Length: 162
Image (tube, rainbow, N blue to C red; front, side, top):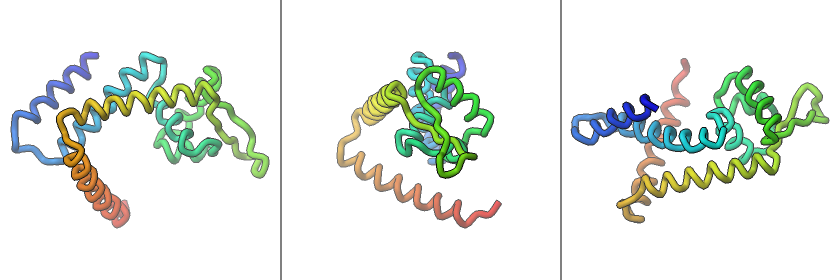
C-alpha cells in the first residue's frame, strides 16, 4: 500500500534528527506495529474490527455486545455489522443472556480461537523483531519506563473532565 510505504519513509525521517518530541516516537512505533500486524491479518481476511473483537473476547469471552462496543472503541453499528460477518465466518457465536433477555452475549468459536492464536503469534513475532539488538536488561528498563509513562497518562486522563 502506498500510504504504508509513505508512512515508513516519514518514520525513517524521525531517526535522522534528535529534535523530535518523544510522543512522536510513541506514535510512530504504535502505528508501524499496527500497520505490520494489520497487513498480515488482512491477508487472512481479518479486518481491524475482527482483530479488536477477537482480542477482546480472548480476554473476556461471553461479554455482551454493548460491552464489546465499550471495550473496543468501535461504534455500535460497526460492532453489529462486524459480528454478523464474524458469525457467518464461524468466528463467533451469539447467545441470548438468560438473566437479561435484552442482552446478547458473544463467544469465540474454535475457529475464532484459532484466528486469535494467529494474531497473537504474529504480534509476538513483530515484537520480537522490534526488539532486535536490544538486550534483556534494556528491554526490562524500557518496560519499567513505559509503565511510568502509562501511569502518568492514566492519572492525567482521570483528572481531565472534557
